[in-house]
Image (cartoon, rainbow, N blue to C red):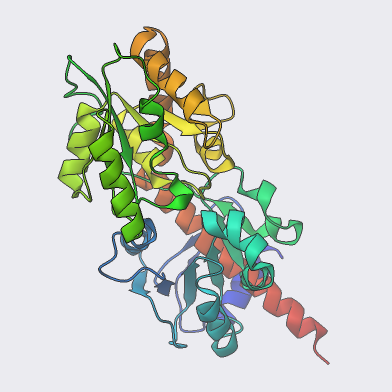
Length: 366
C-alpha cells in the first residue's frame, strides 16, 4: 500500500484524528493516540514486565500519546492495544479483536513466549501472534525462533536503561573481586549458577558473588538462603531498591547473566549503560543483545566453564578490559531515545498494517 492510500485509510478508520503526520517509508510519525498497554504484572509487582510497561508508558507519552497500563482488559475503547506476552495476555488479545476488529494491535514477545509457550501451548501462543498487526521482539535474533508466517511484522526493540548515578566498578574493593547477579530468582534465570561456579574456584581467588532479587517461590528463597549459609563466596541480598542495586553494580567488577532462556534481558541494558562487563549464558536472548562474537559467553547451565571465565576476569589483565570495551560500545544502543524511536516505529507499522489488513478484507467482501 502506498503512503497516500494508507493515510486515506487511517483517516477513514479514525476520522476524528489529526495524528497522522508524513506517513512515508522513511519518516512515519503518529501522535495523539489513546493506547492501552496490557501486562499480567500488577501495580505492586517488581517484575521486569511491569517495569517495561511503566517505562513504555512514559516514552509513548513523550511521543504525544495518552497511555493507560492495565492488567485486566475488558473491551475498553482505545486506538491501539499493546499486549505484553502472547500467551499470558491471550484473553485480552481475543477480547480486543472481538470488540475492535479493525483497530491496530501490537503483541510483545517475551522469552517464555518464544522459548517455552510456543512449545507447551502452541495453539494459543501462535493465535496471539497471528492476531497481531505488529510483533515486538526484544533482541536481534527473535526472527530465527518464531514462525515464518509472522516474521514480516516483527519490529526489534532494545530495552533501555538510564545512565546510572555511579559507573560499574567505580567503588570496587581492591581487596576482593566482587561479582553480581541481578534479577528474580527462578528456574528460567538459573539464578544460583554463579554461586555453584564460585564453589569451584581455587582457594587463592578473591571472588565473592552477591545475588539480589525477589525469589519466585518459597523454595527459591530457601535455596538462596541455604547457599548463602553454606557457601563462603556467596551472599544473597534479597530484593533491593534502585539506589542499592546501582551501588551493588558500582562495587562489582563483573555481572553474571546465567539465564536458560531470555526474551531480551533489561539487565543487559543496565550493565552496558553502567560500563559493567558481563559473563552471559550462550543463548539467543543474550547473543541477540551482546553480539555473536562477544567473548564472555559460557554454555547455559555449565558452572565449570563459568568458573573458569570468572577466574579469567580476575587474573587475565587483558580479558576484563576487553569485556569493558565491548559493553561500553553497546551502551548507545540501549538509550531511552533509541527505545522510544523503536516504539514509535512499532506503533506506525501497526497502524499501517491494520490499514492494509482492513482494505484487503473490504476488497474481498461480497
